[in-house]
Length: 160
Length: 160
Length: 160
Image (tube, rainbow over all chains, first blue to last red):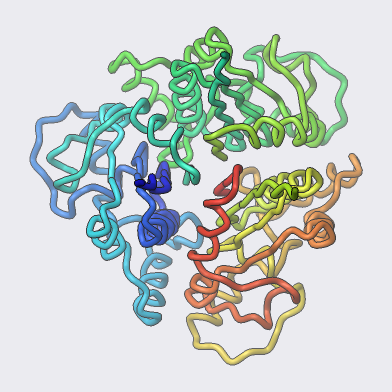
């Protein structure tokens, strides 16, 4: 008799470093408890998935503007408070290192190793002009219907 | 044998355009899957429900001040980030139109057609000095007890 | 035959007065319905639990800086919007008093009387350099594993 694993879903809407860290700590914790975990990245949360290096793509001027103004990847995110023009994130990263806590890029790596499903919301990718080439390789792409399918079967559903 | 429909509840606390759009996209998606969906509007989220046109009402000075300073309706909300003194919302509305995505007022209309229950939190209406005459017609009014009654029966509960 | 009580969990990540009020209103409502309620305080939400009075502790310079810059307790939190350099919270407190709504410190007190479990996230306490002596007496301390254990058994799980 097979038992169905528990499921956990997180919508990561926010593009803040601190909220992304919280999302990945919860996701990794749930995966360690054998939950099937999905993080659904939408709106500013998509920035967490952007590649470090700029990717050359044909874009309209508004999409280029968005691309330029939004942080490029997990290492560039700001804090939801006490950001201080970028000093805040450095302070947080410093104390995280001091306490041997995993950095956000390491938390993302761990999540992938643990089989956490990272799903980019295609509708908001369109709106913000983000293309697959700009996002981390090996993630999935889906819309709100797929999210709801997962969420309706999950015990823990969070919007962050 | 009747099956009970799945339930989904969303607390819309935020008064940000982008978060309101996310809330209504999820709500409409869930309604399309035959979930019974309730959006419970509290604090700044109540501004989403305000009528476009000013409504003449007797109010104390603090309530008048709140009323004046808070955005009047779904079309006036700002963004949670990249707001740029109101330019950000115009940019988002522009790309949404370009991608034929529904605008927030259209998303609200669709939600109502699909039977999504829109509930204004009476307690925070009192705090912010908002009166029924200022909010969209045909919505419901309730307190935290009603929300919890719905949430305890729902599979998906989000706080946005 | 005993019935298991419903469970509700809230992650309070935010350090905003308005969000903390919303969290405690939901928590107290759920407790009034005999739910077993846990609020898990992480990141800026920990400031809600800080004692009013300064506590003398040996800290590194970065931890001292954090301690100095973060609000000391429920009565010092700012608003997520319309904060106006501290005038906003005064306005909200004024209307809450006028409407005989409980203040945040009173909501916290009520939650404790009703047996709501207040849990401080030890990992983020470390990061922000907060020590047990600085937080309210009689709360609990745990990590993400304990949170997930509760959340997996709860009907209502919110991230605020």
